[in-house]
Amino acid sequence: MVNGVTRKRKAKTPPGPRYSQWRRLPRGQSQNETRTHDDLAVEFCALFRLALRGFGFSAPGVERALRRSRELTAAPRVSGPLMRDSMALGAMLLEWSREAPYLDARGRPKVLDIQGSGITFESLVAKHLPAMPLKQVIRMACDTAEVARRPGNKIALLGSIMVSVARANDNLYLAHAIQQVDQLLKTSLHNRRGAGRKRDQGRMERMVTGIISRAKYQSLMRELRPQIYDLLQRVDSSVKHRQPTTARALQNATAVSVVVFVAQEDDLERIGADLGPLRRRVISRKRKP
Image (tube, rainbow, N blue to C red; front, side):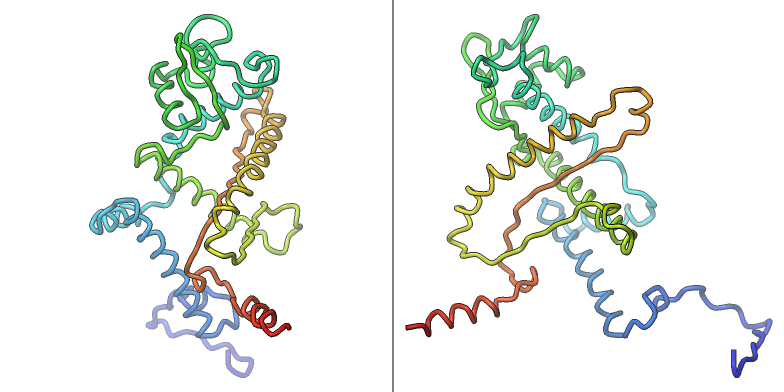
């Protein structure tokens, strides 16, 4: 349009692409902002590529995975089924630690007979992992959780109900990481698409970052572990009270994940930390008489 007059495109001139690389960004975006946008995409891809190398993939193996993924319009469902057994084990340990038939007079998990009728480990396995052989469940529980065999063909839950995939095989550990990344990205995309809507329509997404002395990291972890464990126990209770109880409700079911992890990063620039305020505070303390 020039001076209010719309010019017709010549018939021989093919129309250009409907959206160019620049038009996809918000109106008024500067070239510097566009470059930063692209650089963030490079950082994002580099993190995933380097993470795969850290998980033991060779450089050709990473490239092969990238090539296979380029034509996909949806991510394959591989990690979920791999995690199903460990999640079922967690649910089994939760029942063992809470339900009255499995608790002693002091409210602690009973030492159970492994096999037999009635309240036994075998009865828990039949409910939560019916397709898995009993011996395999015992091995998985003892290898990945605070469970141990006891004399007289018995088994005990010694501590928390946490299932540690860090002790599992490489595939299960990678599947666990994929599930965390998948849920994080879906949450971020959901909140980004819903920006500007009512706050209660978003999904909770919180991050607390602080600077501490490296020597005090372990003491912080000792302080945080029981707090996080108690929080997740309450989450388990809240979820259980809201589980579907009818076939109709089950048809409209959804999965809710609360993921908590404590990260440590020595590259302060990567984490976006600013040492300025701390540095000024340290200097001001030195100057005080």
